[in-house]
Image 1 (cartoon, helix red, strand yellow):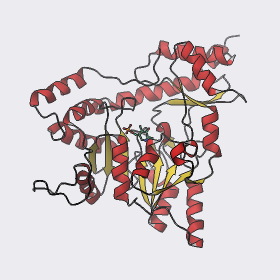
Image 2 (image 1 turned 90 degrees about the vertical axis):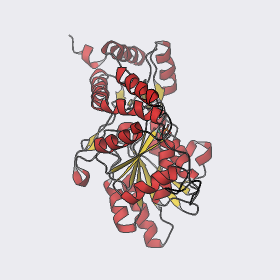
Image 3 (image 1 turned 180 degrees about the horizontal axis):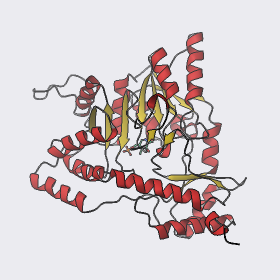
Length: 385
Ligand SMILES: *Cc1c(COP(=O)(O)O)cnc(C)c1O
């Protein structure tokens, strides 16, 4: 079976892990944690980075620090992995789901902008925080959110769990990496993400006070220099030195992993050109990371579930996209703006094998399997007379 997304691990990871074991520092204090944080911050262009036990933990702490809490409101992308909304729900805040924008599949930030302006004019409750997700590696259009922050003080938490290394190519955020423009940005190092620590996450920020508070909350809110003195309800959310050793090795490979992801997306774009499907989204103003190359079936009535099942019979590990959060039991009664675009993505979309280690031959097998299933000739072969 050609997997959807499997990690690329090698000698460097093994060497750092061995060093870590030999040092005896295997828990959440140790030199690999410090190095991973520093080098991660440098790699994305943020001032501070705080390693966490998971991406979900990172989001939970970031949202709390941004001001999410009981009685408040957090605007969240409707079309995302459920962890985005769960992290907001942990804070006790109410949730406002915001539909996607068809070109990027990310939050329709213009729609949210206009709704916040409308609410402000009539005195309705505004979100305290926007949690914007860079979906499947594509940057969200963030400038309308910067405007909301400027005008109404709405804080921005970026869920960049899937988008490490993606950036913007135009406008006020030109050449900035996702995760570094909001008040806080979060990443995941789960096994299937762009880099992995087995499980882990990171918070980045340019604000020294927020970074210190993140470190404090993720270590049981222990008061520095005192034993067993804690000043608020904190969490045991730190990353272990063992995991950070793997993370540091993965980070050294990041340019290579991103090149591989982008090459895979380019080859799908070329190879699937003649088939009734739209290619992985890539707006002209964005440099996506293409964490997963995902496509939409164009023929009406075609069921992505059936296509995924047929591909599995051919040894190809594809997967459907997420049902929108407004269809998930915990969030069915949440407030929402739209939802039809997210519904359409679920009805038509699937992700194709996108491991950084995917071979050319395996990718050709994926394209050929799709071509024979959808009854058309792929573009590259269709050019012969
Ligand atoms: C993976 C993911 C998360 C959660 O990260 P974990 O490390 O698995 O906790 C959050 N948001 C999005 C969009 C993700 O894809």
